[in-house]
Image 1: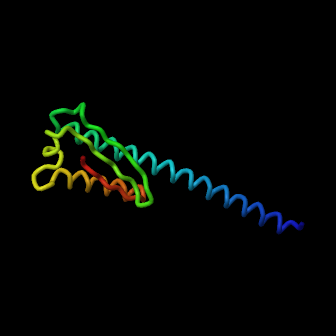
Image 2: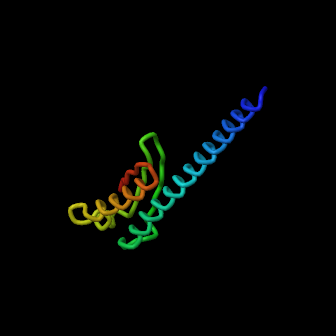
Image 3: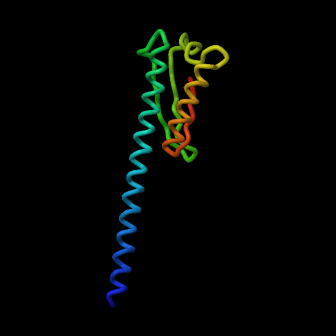
Length: 111
């Protein structure tokens, strides 16, 4: 093996290591963004409902992105949805912005 071939192999190995590190970093950033989105929904919901202890946000990931399910007490659903869906729409807009920065998609379901 000559010197040029050795250098080429080293460059290829370095590129692969860099790519693996970038993929790991991207995955970590995505997970952190998902957790932040979940916390955001939980914070907003607990701030506007009468029974904040009944607020529960669950997270699920599928091939289309992240699904956040917000569960509140029956009597608080109207507060979370808002008149003509304005509060729910605002929460979805905030989530979309955060998800776009993280390079993923997010869906908010209110149950």
